[in-house]
Image (cartoon, rainbow, N blue to C red):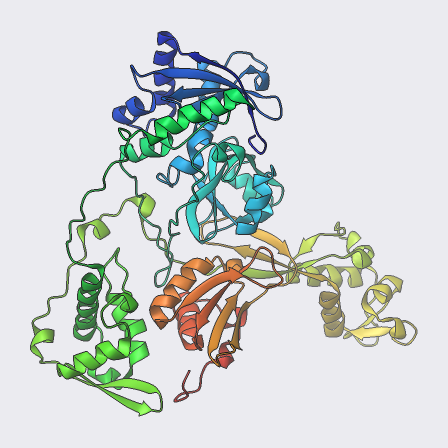
Length: 603
């Protein structure tokens, strides 16, 4: 709607009755907003104007402007043949278009206000240009797609950042999306980051709002963080309206800038943090707590000697309290080896280099006062009484079933059983169809029941050109094997709690590779995580903690809609434990695990 510039038609003061009706409509449309928020959004006594706009398509849009700042807008009758936007129809229209006015600004403060769907960063450019979001571009998270109905307003975010960058209307329900195999148009896009409506504001970029992070063994949904109501007004005050060309436009922009520069309009000062400790001090305290917790409750004498990397990844991190994140690089120690050296100086543990470049904990002073006096913290009440909507969702690997697709060259063989080009079949169905075809056409060799006589159709479908005149019979197993090889590959993937999705082509495994940089340092790269319902950004965050190494997420070479995770060093051991042991992915869907460093070899 706002892919191109719009034009201002008129600007008049609102009537008292229309102001009251506007407040009532906002209250009914957004029941989650409190009375104070409604009062800030639609002030009772301050100046409130009604501005008529023409979009580039000729649509007439009514914008409500308070103090020179646009706050709400609704679509006029030219898109609704029933005429005036009544309350019944208007609630739908208003719920769509009011939110779209301040979506990419306000939803950055309220990221959970609307059901959010995720797409790839490269898709945003198309959306800004006026394209709708197609379902093949939607990323299916492990927890499944949000449940929406056709016509529902939805937010659209990018992989790796929960801050919405677009607002659209669902073209079909979630159930219909899954039934279609994620094909077709998914959302009619109304407003995007970087469009002309966004440009009429302060042109700020989306904040970085972390996506749900993967814990062990699954996905943790972030708790909703609803900011103060004043943040809404602060964001709203940043919006400005693009008017007509020439003097009118300049005058209007001057008026808006004067309002935004008014020192009396200031954003609320955030309250002081309850903890006066620095971040480094807090991280030191958390590191000591997790270290002692791991020694007291997880590490046994039989586990020694214990690799320091295993101690950190499998024991220390798992003792981190709910809602906190341990990052040694943000502590005063910076490195695990320096911290363990300090603990050794306190005579709590003993660390030795049992093989070149690889350190292990070889002894623990179990009766050390710091261990014996340490009290294992109780789970926080909030983690015990988590709301249903934000409860931890364990990651379940998808169920993947190989399928076969009938190509044009084999339609004659399968049409007798009611199948045509493009039909998708399971292996058992293919075998039954071939067996029935052979028996129905009396093609079993009378002298040898293990052989099948080839009729013209079987010859065309099963034999190579150089075999057409030499091979007249095939054994059963060879016939069935050849048939499966001639069919096109497909597969069915089913994520926990979701409808199965059928996809054509091969199942690409998670690909782990090693590369050597100019500095002679190795990096580990992981691709195709998305196919298994794993968010590359979340996996990168987990690996950064486990490996204590820098990670980056970039576009995978040669794949526009795929990302790759890059981790410094040879981290295949950590990846193996994460993917195989914690996420329970079958080994056959992971390639590159054999490149793990040999014991004793420096990474």
